[in-house]
Image 1 (spheres, one colour):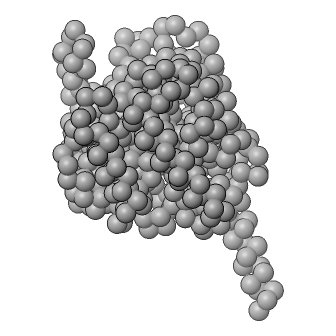
Image 2 (cartoon, helix red, strand yellow; image 1 turned 30 degrees about the vertical axis):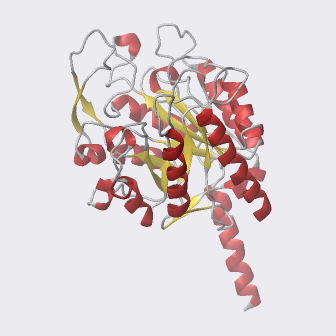
Image 3 (cartoon, helix red, strand yellow; image 1 turned 60 degrees about the vertical axis):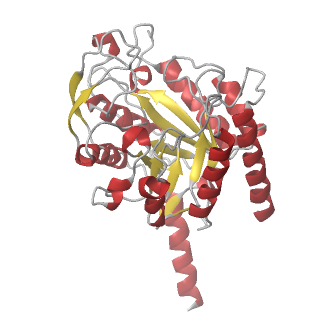
Amino acid sequence: MQRLNFLKLTLVVLVLTASCSSIKVGGPGRSGLVASQARPFDAKLNPMCLHTEGNKVLDASGKPVWLYGVNIASLEWTNGGEHVEESVNRAINDWKVSLIRLPLAQDRWFGKMTNQTDGGAAYRALVDKLVDTCAAGRVYINLDLHWSDCGKWVNEGGKLGQHDMPDERSIDFWRDAATRYQNQPNVIFGLYNEPHDVSFAVWRDGGTAADKPARWNPSQAKVNYEAVGLQKLYDTVRSTGATNLVTVSGLDWGYDLSGVLQGYEIKGSNLIYETHPYPNKPPNWDKNFGDASSKYPVYAGEWGFGRRDTNGLEYAQNLMQYAKKHELHWTAWDLHTTAGPTLIKNWQYEPTIFGQFVKEQLAALAAARGSNE
């Protein structure tokens, strides 16, 4: 009996190790696109491997994990980012995060911007460096597909930005990015930032989307395109062999998850549903994401308040109490000086009122985590 138990234990260890191992794949991608291979990583990271059971996120040993931290934006709107390397280091060492959410752009990944001449190599190398920095600090990183292009690359006349839904080019992005970081223990895949203005049927399965340009765009002409559903993006990630956690944002600009309890859930495993609860959203948190947290892991991928939110601190306190009660994971928006609501006033990383509140929350959580290890 003891030998049998030993063999069972050995098998479990081998399965867990294999699920987080780097498998060299790759080969040619679609015409004109890079075809990444899986990046190697230090086997010492294997204890960080995450999986889900019910509404819990667990590490390789089966211990519950609570993920919390900040967003670090700018790689969606610039090729080289704005202070992103320093911000990642500050987030890890000063703000004591366990998770960083990193917004990305599919056109920049493949070097499709008119000012990119290297096929996106420098952009991908920078993301690699940030992933590795997080790994060295034993911090998780959520690679969030933030900006897309309605199915047409920028250098072909497309418009990169925040759109209703992902598109065919988003499939290309996830086929490559998921291959590149497949099973790297500290990497999480955020399928699409903030779906909006479609039905839950289109959200899950795809269909026609009529994208309205941002209000500051001189042209308000809608762009009709074929939207790709979140199920397709999830399946694309899994087709590479990647078992990494995946986050799936709801509708209403990422806020509304009610559809996942009404028959529109994503079929699969190791996934977390993502919500973006800002003060201007309808206040029914139970309906929009709390109820879903009783069945699935739920993650507040963006939240925050700005100077115009007179009850901002009260909102933040209530949200953090709600997050604790419902065991929500979270990343506050944003460790940047202008992409509001901002956590910092300047590039000396002086916190705003919102930032000071978040920093105190993170310090308390880090202290609690340390006492439990």
